[in-house]
Length: 61
Image (cartoon, rainbow, N blue to C red; front, side, top):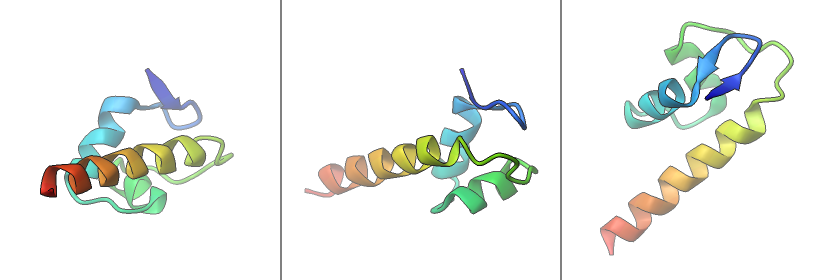
């Protein structure tokens, strides 16, 4: 599924960037070799980052 239509960034690419250490949307764009355009996808990226952070917190318990 495309998360960023402007740059054609898919959900799996974002998850891979997060798994590689991206902590902010800007780092996700950089990992994908893109730059933000309209920024509509930033909220979705932040949600995915939050989900990953929460999953790691539960795993640490």
